Length: 394
Image (tube, rainbow, N blue to C red; front, side, top):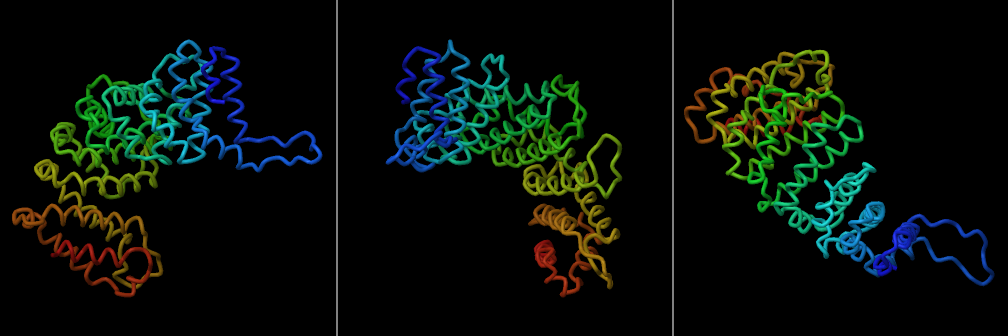
């Protein structure tokens, strides 16, 4: 059936796509023929996989430059095939389908559906196919520039909820590709832009990209913020990105979230969102602080962390030093553990930083060591907290 895509007729090609899609959404026969029985629902999809039709459809994309409607329908069919099985994903990747589809994502499209179709197929290939092969194909300069263009355009010009969701899906794909050491994250200029977006609005900038950028503090913007923090961790694995992280004042931006509980201001993150961002900022600091120790000292990072821990204790969020019927806050416990891990990493084999830790820091550690042993079995993480405390002392 796939070979019929060679017939230069839009109607034939569209019918091929519809027929393949019907394999996955079968309709009950109008009437049973005596002596015959319908095939099982899984038979036709299995035959489609074994025939290699997914591979043929990818190759047919080169024939459809003058038939955008057909191309869109082929991508819809590939979206269906790639979501159905890992075998179909393998077939698509075998003919370099990831790079071929990525090359189409910024093509002119009056329907507004091309980018979504391409993004969905790429997401399926990364999730159900060989992630190593998919990221390898997407790590070329052309593909990475296409991903960059699509993401930045949606960030600056997308306003509908569907646009924001698509933007986040693209960022997920970019993060997966950035994990490949061969990806031109820095050479493409994308790393510098991502750092700019990750530190907005904490760091003021006159860069045209963020001059008119506004966050709606929606769930989609919240998700993007977390994804950008995660991208910073991915970048930190490449030492050539350290200078960009320093120039972008990344630590200063992250430490803006490490502040004792402030009431949310109107038009900003909710209290629950602030708490989650605080956790992720602390987790991100664990990876970045060892690379940027001077920035950490300049920003008085240890003082900020100690103030945060002191607030957590005084607010009654982390410990039950005295008898209390209130339950522990598991999220606050995690904040505490991340903060201790940052301090432990920073002070390791550095006498001067140990001095900066000071009597206040020692007093906090002693209070943790006096924790009621019964709390170790609460299931909230006190056992991990005591281990983190011992590690920090060690």
